[in-house]
Length: 128
Image 1 (cartoon, rainbow, N blue to C red):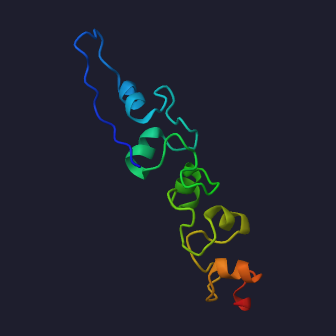
Image 2: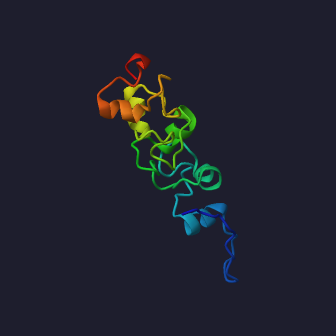
């Protein structure tokens, strides 16, 4: 679900112009007084216009990493719980110390998710 900011027509009876914030409230339900309504580290405008994330939910993909952390700190996709597709969610990879952008963090030939499920170390290429 994407959000699009569009101008709001001013009723003829309105004496003062509508502010940009009125558009924000009417189209996205965000708080025009706060630059980052969900406090995830991404401005509401960036969430709507650049990342297609939800400006009312600090963790759009539900992987326990805030959208701002995913974009600015880890480089992961805030719309995908498992950015690299190795069957470990991004937050699990961060907790394990594996790379959430690489399926096989140790380069040994077995994906991180498979190694975790097999009880081997995803950071040790010797046990692949």
